[in-house]
Structure formats: structure tokens, C-alpha cells
Image 1: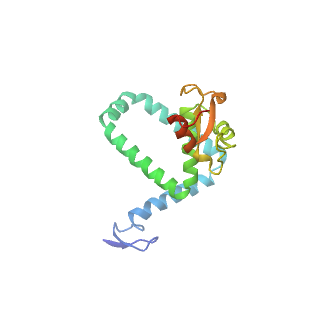
Image 2: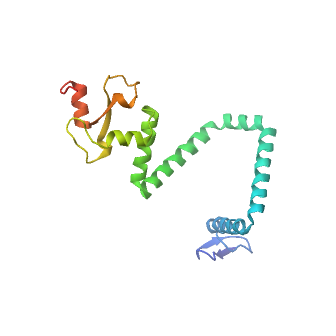
Image 3: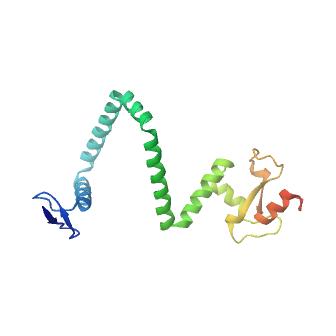
Amino acid sequence: MERTCLKCVDKFEGYRNAKYCPKCNIIVIKEYNREYYRKLSPEKKKERNDKTEEYRKKWYLENKEKVKEYRKKNLHKFREYYKAYNKEYRNNLRAINPVLVKEKRRKTFYKKYYNLTIEEVNSLQSNGCSICGYNKLIEVIALHHKDKNPKNNNPNNLIPLCYSCHYAVHRGYLQI
């Protein structure tokens, strides 16, 4: 039976008592649940969350082997799903705030490769290139290892260089 959605006014095929199209129905249910949960007292919310958490733990312990087997069998699906999710998340984040994405990438890069916090990195890079003095864009300043040992990430061993000077030092055109 053809029905008209009360929310988006689109036509859809539905049951006799259907008020919303499938897309809007999901939105309406989420809104209702959100509103219901918001009205609950803090004690009820805590009790409800505790029960849910207990149930999840109990269920997982009972079905641990089934879950592992299912994950092994459907590993490719999980990988595809997370790959698509991460791609969509990154695209949405880039669209919202590209500067935030760049900053987050810098943090993870320096934490992973240099084992430094972003504050330490910023303090090293804040004066700019130690050879030419360039300091307009902090992202352009790289950290160079004085002793040429990439595993020695002691802040005393790192000096800030712009990309041009860093390239020249590695090629032997400049000496530090």
C-alpha cells in the first residue's frame, strides 16, 4: 500500500499503520530513544548502563568461542567494513576541519617515530630552521638527527631544519 511519510513527505510502500518511510523511521526511533534516555534520572541511567554492561560481559563469556569463530570466518567483511568506515570518517573530518586533521596527523607521527609529545616538538620547531631561520609555517620544519642515528630521539640530538636545508644537509651541500 502506498503511503506518505509524515517527516519527509515522500511516497513509500508500507503497512497500513506505517507513518514514516524506512529512512525517517530510523531517525524517529533514534530521536525517541534519545529523548526517553534524557528524561531518565541519573540513578536509572547508571542502573541501566550497569545492567547492559553486565549482560554484555556475561553473553561474551558464554559465547566467546562462537564469536572468535565468526570473526575468523568473516575477517574479510570486518576489514572491508572498517576500511570503508575509516575512509568515510577521514573524508568527513577533512571536510569539517582540515587543520584539525593535519594537527592530529602531526601528533601521531611524532609520537610514533620520535616518541615525543606535540608540545616538545612545537618547542623545538618554534624558533624555525636553525640554518636559514625560516619560521613562517611550522609544518615545514623537520627534525634532523645530529648524529644521523634515527633511533636516538633525545631532544638534544634533534635540530629543526626547513625542508630545503634538511635536503641540503643530507646531500652534503651544507654542514652543521
